[in-house]
Image (cartoon, rainbow, N blue to C red; front, side):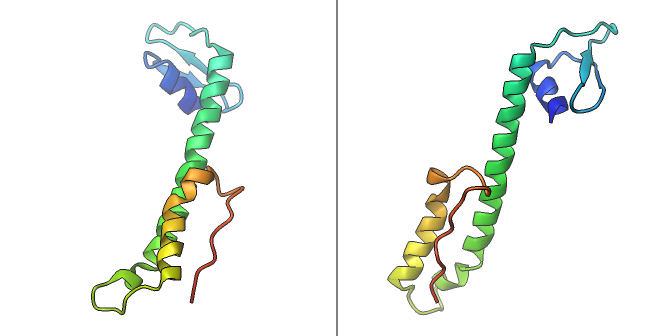
Length: 109
């Protein structure tokens, strides 16, 4: 993740070397780029949070897709519980930002 953070913060980099914990960047002349470690750390945290949110959205989208047949025009009307469940799934990212902490609504029969 450190490599992605460096690339995002220093778009003029030419090459990044090292492991993800001690990566360093060089410009096109081969000069070491002095990294702002606080900024790199903050960017890493931001990228991790974005990835966790995307994983939450992916799971939520799959769960909504599993109930799409409830809303098809050739099926009976959705119950209030089914409508509430689908809305709760759509709203889940208003409350949660990660699969680590999410509490999923209960799927109705």
